[in-house]
Amino acid sequence: MRKLALTLLIVLFLVLTAAFYPRKVDKPMVAGSGDMAVYIQAKYAAPEYHSPLEWWQTHHMDMINRGDLLREDCLYCHQPEESCNNCHNYVGANPIEDTRVGVSGNTRP
Ligand code: HEC
Ligand code: HEC
Image 1 (cartoon, helix red, strand yellow):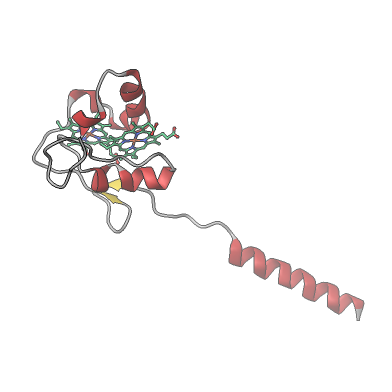
Image 2 (cartoon, rainbow, N blue to C red):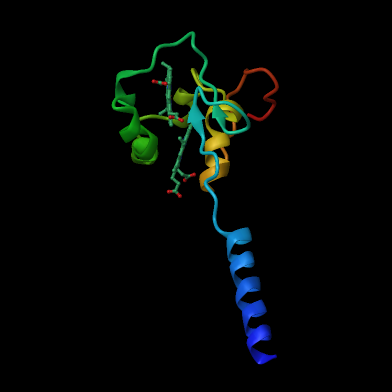
């Protein structure tokens, strides 16, 4: 009887492990598909400081925090909702807001 209970317990443990085992999730990706796709407007070419892109993906904040470039400069080419915040939401970074004056929908000074 004890042996049966123990066996059942082990089976239950294995089933739960399989059920909750971490799975691979979608990552934000340029030209990807689905919710995690990062859309970049194609009418502009990528500036030189984006190269190599793998470096830029993890270092753009350094350039902005250092003050070499303004956040507003990025929005000349990038739509915040489509090409900043989908990734920022994923990594838990602060959302980017378009606060430029005179751009459609912005009433804030
Ligand atoms: C002249 C237009 C232009 C400007 C200005 C610009 N970008 Fe980009 N950016 C692009 C293009 C085009 C791509 C796509 C590059 C590619 O796919 O090879 C891109 C890609 C990126 C990516 C990579 C996205 C990904 O998921 O791999 C990040 C991050 C990014 N830009 C951030 C910024 C930031 C931050 C600024 C401001 C400092 C900025 N960009 C300014 C055009 C621009
Ligand atoms: C491919 C993913 C990705 C994309 C796309 C992306 N970022 Fe980021 N961003 C990050 C990561 C990762 C961090 C670092 C978060 C941290 O260190 O906590 C970050 C941090 C930042 C920071 C400093 C963090 C803060 O809030 O203090 C700024 C500013 C920034 N990003 C601007 C932009 C802008 C502007 C765009 C769109 C043009 C953009 N990012 C697009 C991944 C991305």
